[in-house]
Length: 404
Image (cartoon, rainbow, N blue to C red; front, side, top):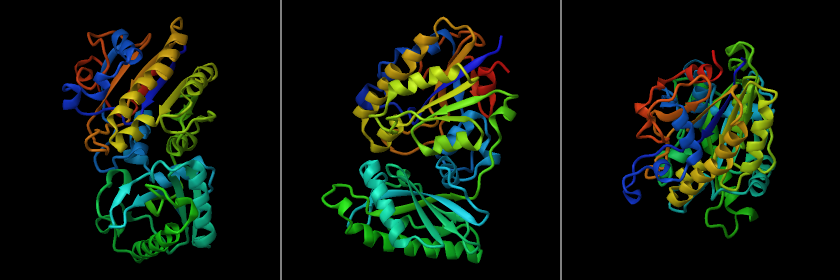
């Protein structure tokens, strides 16, 4: 029988035990009957999603889960998101992710998301930056909320630049977070000098923009990071012997991985990347996609955002809503199917106390016709390592799910 598969990907869900939760992790503490049922009728294990030597970022981690080996194929976050937006990068173009962030008057990065700036306000600020500073050397593009892009044009620029992830740098002084050349080339030095100057000019410009007036966390700085050139990822249908994949996400970095690898990228109205996302629409889209695709990757961003905010109450809410409105209804709709394997996992941990990604392998549970149940009956970080699924990496999970 031809096997189909769905992965429920809960971005940033894994965590550490917390004293305020009686020594439980948020995933252990939350009410998650849907995810627990996958563990109970299937098997559990772990997945190492962040290889050594690469950024501890969601693009790397999700590429790993999909089996695209970022050790060999990672292009940088900027070009992945540019692909998601349909931006055609020329041979001399370098795309950068460009957050709108909030820095306080004392020179400290306070909020990587400018208070989760609305898409409308972010688009207005990015248009204003393009009108003020756009040229034949730099173009600004708006994305989703704080997640925007900047593209440098010309041979004098390089992608060999050291940078700091903004969501891992909150509450640190700006003078500890500057870009720096990653090699001795003149191009790298010129790129750093150009962007440093642009950042300071943009900060002065954004400080007086009406969109930022009266806000507790205004988008008063740009933050270029994770540069790269045109990406080339393995095609899903080649990697997995003719199988057809679909991807559902609110955020450009995940959509971009899908577009780069030839998967169908499905748009869900009202998908926001936060706790106000359209869960029901995502679940319905996943079920519809399974009728025409072999593999569906259903990604939810909200839990990651709550983790970076350090908001435990909101993280618990996001975990339970993911389970209630995504996992449970999809499982119910599939309960009479014997041709679909399912799996649930995060892409990486974001411990609520650290508010940044860590490289700890994440828990995974999988169930369906190709998985023999083990003794694990609930899904969490503590029990999963004892399951019979073992320690996964590379394309092992997707191949198992597709019966390959």
